Length: 107
Ligand SMILES: [Zn+2]
Image 1 (tube, helix red, strand yellow):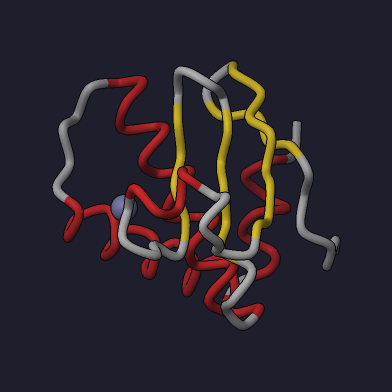
Image 2 (cartoon, rainbow, N blue to C red; image 1 turned 30 degrees about the horizontal axis):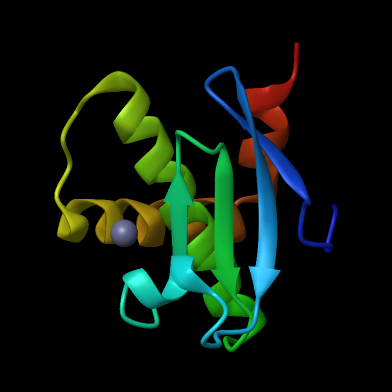
């Protein structure tokens, strides 16, 4: 199983670039969201992750941003709380059951 952070992800047909950035005055994306752990933009097809978080939090943040992009694409209008809860649930399911992703993705 891959342990490296992907540099791009396909979310419902769109390819998103994944960038890890250090929060700084030069980084307007993270500034706009009050030093958020991550941000995502369907317009730019970009997921930006704050470098100042541990690996486990980075995984949660990446999944969180992917759920935001799914939500945006299908128009569920999930709340931040719902996105946060779903990210935690999916991360736990996939972490606790590595065979689950393998089975679901098999053809
Ligand atoms: Zn969010």
